[in-house]
Image 1: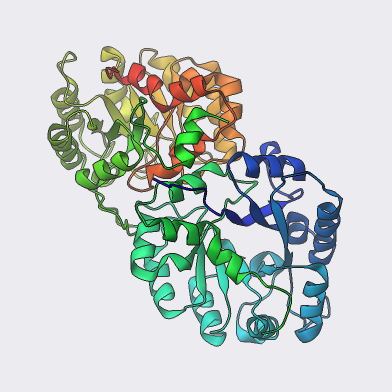
Image 2: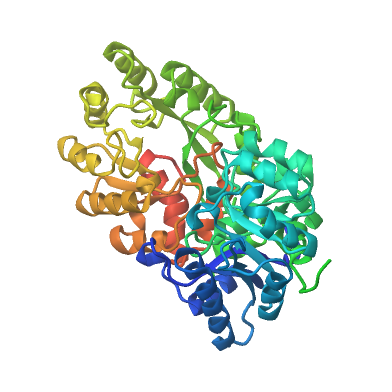
Length: 258
Length: 272
C-alpha cells in the first residue's frame, strides 16, 4: 500500500494535434490538465506533437505560446520539453547556441525523433547534437520506435555522460534492454508501457528504482494504468517515490552548463 | 472521482469487490522474457497484490503448439487454486478433429460440473481463420452447449479481424463470444464495436498493454457496460496496469463494477 501521495511527474505527455490519431486522442491543453489532475499528477514534461509531426521549431514555439496563455489555479506544473535536430543542416543551432535556445525558453529536456525526422543516430549525424547536451546535463528523451537497440548501445557508449530516457519500451523488450541497463548508467526507462509481469519489481531489484521514470504516454494512452503499476508495485515507498517523480525531477535541466 | 480509483491510487486491495480477469494465460512464451513467475503460483501472487478474485487461464502452450498440455496445466492449476484460477479449454485448429472433440468433451462436459468454463482460440498464432472449416467442430460444440468462446481478435489480421465474428455469431447464435483485445488497433476497435453493436452475443474484452485514450468511455456509450469484460493478458502483461485503466476511466462506478467482474460472472456462470 502507498501511504502518502507520490510526487507524480509525467515524463511523457504530448500536447497539440497529431497527424495520425483518432478523435478520442484530440484533447486540448485544458482537457490534458484535467486528466492529469484526475489521476493525481502534479507535474508533467510536455512535448509538442506539432514539433514531431510538422516542424520542430514551429512546434516548440507553439508549445511555449500555449503554455503562456493557459492559466488555471492548482493546475499541474507543465515543463517544456523541446524537440531538436542535429545542427549540420543549419535548421537548428548547435553547441552553446543550442543551449541558449533551450535556456531562454525554459526547456528542461529535449526529445529527438531520428526515424520521423530522417537522420542517422550514429556519431556522424548526432555527435554534434548529443555531445553538447551530455556535457551540459540536458536529458534526452527518445521513443523506442525511433531508435534500434544497437543504435542505442552505440549512442550511450559514445556519450557516457548523457541521460537518455527511453520512452514507451514495452513488455517484450527485456532481452534487449537488460544488457543495456547493465552497461549504460545513463539509460532510463519511461514506464507508461513497461507492463511486463513484475516488470517494475524486476528492474528495481536488478538495477535500482532510479532507472525508471514514470510517464503516461498521453494523449494516446489513458493515464491510470501507468499510475497503478507503481501504486501496486511490491517495492519500498522510497522506490515508488523515486519512480513517480524524484528521479526525473533530479534529471531535468536547470538551464546552466555542467 | 471514483471509489475504485481512490482504492487504486492508494494501492489498496480491491478484494471487497468482484474482480474477475477473464483473459489470462500461464507459463513462459518463446518470444520474450517474463520476469515474474509466470506459473499458477506467481499469477495468484499477482492477483493477490491487487485484489483480483479470479482469473480464467489459457496457458501459453495452448495458443502455441500443444492444446492438450495447456488444458492439463490449466485444470491442474484450477484444482490447486480453487476459485482463484479457472480454466479455459484451449483449442488449436491445427489439431485433428478427433483431438479437438476429445478435449471439448473432456473439459466442458458434463455441463453441470465442467473442468473448464469456456473455450479459448488464437487464430493469429495458429495462422488459421476463425471462420475456417477446421474450427467448425468447436463452434458447433459451443453452439450446442452454449459455451462461451474467447478469441484473440486483431484489426487487419485476416485470421482474427473482429468482423469475422459477426458472421460466426449469425451462424452459431447460442455462443457468447468474447472479442479478445477488442480488435487491438484503433481500426480493430472500430470494427469490434460495430460488430458488437450489431450482434448481442458479442462482448468486448479489454486485455491490452495499454488502454487507448477515450476508448473505454466510447465502448460504454456505444455497446453499454454490460458487454465489456475486464481482461489483462496476465502474465504476458501485469494485470495491475489494466486495473488502473478501468478504475480511472470517466465512466460510473456501476459501469466499472459490471466491467470488472459482474459481466464475466454472468458470462461464465461464476457465483458471486
